[in-house]
Length: 465
Ligand SMILES: NC(=O)c1ccc[n+]([C@@H]2O[C@H](COP(=O)([O-])OP(=O)(O)OC[C@H]3O[C@@H](n4cnc5c(N)ncnc54)[C@H](OP(=O)(O)O)[C@@H]3O)[C@@H](O)[C@H]2O)c1
Image (cartoon, rainbow, N blue to C red; front, side):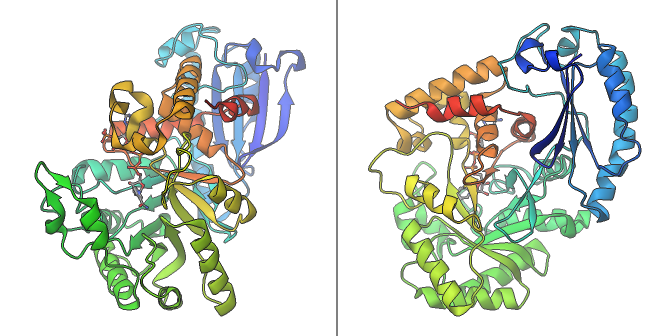
């Protein structure tokens, strides 16, 4: 009937056309099934899948074979396949040869999707969809979509936070992001550490520390959180920035100890310098970080909110002294491009993209990838502070392109933006989302199964105003 594709990791390596003349995605009304399978799994049965396709129960099967990881991760995936396939049979039995299947799953009957795009599909409970990417060239694999925990314990209740963490892990995610300062600035009366504490209690209760790649940050905690609140529950960021603790040796040592206590763990996988501290001598910071790595308290280091020239200096000092260099750069990055001439240390610009392209040993972790939800709502965009650095005709054109293509694909605009980010290869990007609710997380997570053709990505890339 149509196309059966095998993939290893995120590279399609072996397209197997069942009937070659029918393989163009645009000729069929796509109805896609992905199966994540371990190559060694005997239950993985291509013939059955082929039969389903030939008898019109399924029109496109995309079989994702994970790289032969072996060990616990491989075994877990393999063992998940059997029940998944068993659960699939009744599901397929209920499908009608055309159109109806979409309706049954909340889609539109008979809808034709954009050429070359694979639409979002229904996710079964517990279905794992997440791919992994390498962090720098460390050999360490992290999930392609990272979960920001900034709002947990303040704007998101502990109970809902735990549900979100469980759901993210269920979907195959492992890359969690927090900071010691989260979230003093989110709720008057908070003093930082709320997010780490929620994570720590969840990790302790689940006993799953070994399954997550845990990142936290130091240097941006303020000394006097209560002093920076203005009337009307607003934070005065000008005074707050002047009050950052910074990245001195003692500060970092004390901050990481406190983070570890709250996180109820002996080590973090990634420790970021949250804001670039130009007052503390750089060597003092780098030496302190090297000691923390040597002591086994942090496995890798990263930097956030930093200009490219500083990053280069940091890396040069590390190379010269044999100190561990940052493997992750956490900056604000999205589909919209910052305004020309904008002074900003935190938002990726062309120069930084170029630098990252030349240095694949440094992974871009993109925070605020959906700009607080502004892609989905023209009303939210109006006067929203998150739009300020982007205002202009280029963003107008890009917002229009996202809206139009998302409509064509029948997905939410922010899902398209996340998928576009995850399709970037030079440099590779790990979007770091920060949903406030479980429902928002579910919507964010669906973006990992949105596959964009090179033509669609090029259309998005070309857009400018
Ligand atoms: N290094 C740094 O300096 C830095 C700075 C900021 C963040 N971070 C990290 O990056 C993470 C993500 O940052 P972020 O929170 O700015 O990212 P984001 O994902 O761009 O924004 C999150 C906000 O988007 C909205 N949203 C999310 N899903 C939605 C959906 N499905 N529909 C509609 N709206 C949706 C929500 O807004 P509403 O609450 O209005 O509904 C939510 O609070 C944080 O958790 C933190 O770990 C790091």
